[in-house]
Length: 300
Ligand SMILES: [Zn+2]
Ligand SMILES: [Zn+2]
Image (cartoon, rainbow, N blue to C red; front, side):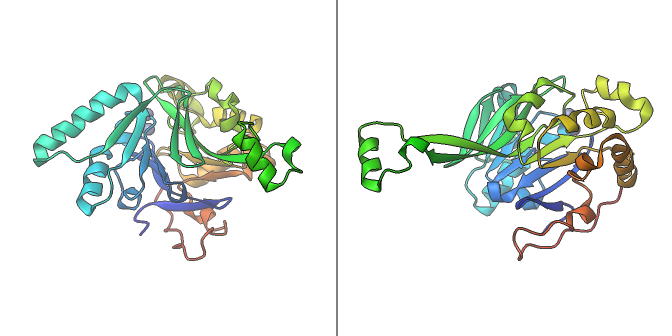
């Protein structure tokens, strides 16, 4: 089932994806029914109803038309692609052109969002966007569990008393946000790391494209992160896990791990996983005992 995708389970959240800089990036969280970027639309992510598209670069966006078309082909309800507002028209144009090529237009929703917007994924689960820094229209996405809690001052009331207060219009509950995942897409450093829902998400999914000592400038020019940037950013954050994506094919995983481990404390490094490092994923207990075992590590 997993094709070439690799699988991680971090605090009970299953993440299934593939990410190589410039080639393809797609990271799905099937339990939350979201897929960050679509890459080339691998078949395992097609049943997911929400694609959160961070920006329009081909390695992240190539599969949009195929995603809609395949869902239509197998009889799934039309999917939804959430993306930066400026991509809505060009994506609709793309779908129209594919409609002319195929002879019919595949149904699908394309929803434009700006930084700070929210979209309800299902009751009690929202996605909130934030501005990232990639030199083109780009967004990051936090998936947040919103729980309704009873205010402390009403803790000793009975059920009927609470119902009566509610009827009178008294706000007896407050909402508590638990950010589960935060996906930064392709980005250079930016103010978004100060946002609570980014810095405290259970899993922060972050790019780390460059590792070579003399590639710091290349990272800056391409609005990407160098391992030295990542090493400076991670210790400031409170995430339980950091999942690093978007390594280039030049960088062997062993080298990547070695260079980051030299730059951060062990207490930070032990919270780091590299998406394409399936062997590390096998050390995490699967959330679902019936889930398929991780696929073999990708060639690096
Ligand atoms: Zn990319
Ligand atoms: Zn990009």
